[in-house]
Image (cartoon, rainbow, N blue to C red; front, side):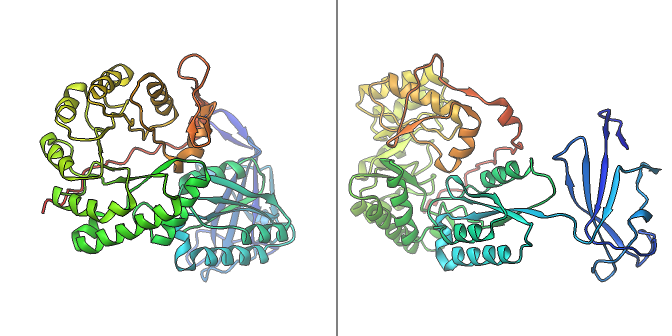
Length: 449
């Protein structure tokens, strides 16, 4: 028995050799001798902990040992495991295949290659081995639950189609959650190109993604087709590329859907005018933050020269900071952020100021379900609400940590009828998510030239 003094649990320890048959004892630490590697810890039957090890020689090939010859030490003291087994290959392997079906997998036959690799893996599985299949784009789909039916797995792989954006970390969270309760040896195989799809779309990908947005019932979507590197290297070529991408998105979305362009403060006024001319046939719904936000007069002058509405305000903190922008016509849509601009009380004042100038409000909303619900209540309480965004690629994770999940119907948010905001955070679900600090979003620099 192994005693974990820190927690006071008694942990029955089971050692399983992946490669071994009867042979002479050995010193694992001897120069040039065999190497013992812990390949996996199985805690699904906690407090029993199963440790899988492999033993290899200097060449990396498995070597034969006598399982009873193993001596296990903790803090220089021998411990007695509950059981040691060594029977060549121990037990079946359960694998979860996670395949990226986002839009970037359409190029270069990436999805075809991923599906071929996945099916080759299925074909080499032993009879008792199991596998499951999940796909990920904006959302996570359990395509085939864990099963030993290899033919069903192959058919499910064949049926995969690519579209949408990428939510790889959400997929890994789903994969780990699926495998954790299962006993035995486990593995996760992720087949992805690792692209985030935000700025590398081809026209074909943009067309497919726009069709998918409409299929889901959305009346509009936002994209960020511009890249700093592209504008810096070849602004004419980059704007031409963006023109073709947005034109394809318009074709895929149809004539009535809104296409909003995220500019991320990358442009100078000169470049914003050039982009406006290039995208005019596609009728963009707005240019979001085309130039840095600090100079309201520059924004005012730019809006006078653009046919496309400017949307801005996500970094402004009070009605006093919005005043010059609104009163001088520096934008056609304001985007106050409830997390930044004083919450519901202050943002309602900002909305009232904008209403006197007939300017609609589209709350900036990169936050989670609590922020989304607060923005929904704001939208329902002001006369000049326009549209509310939400981060579709992260919806699966956000739904998992909210009770109930934020509801959608025909591309619209459904207001709750319960008291308060209408949701509660699921603290147990949140506790299972590893903390990842929010990356800094330092400005890379607008192209003032």
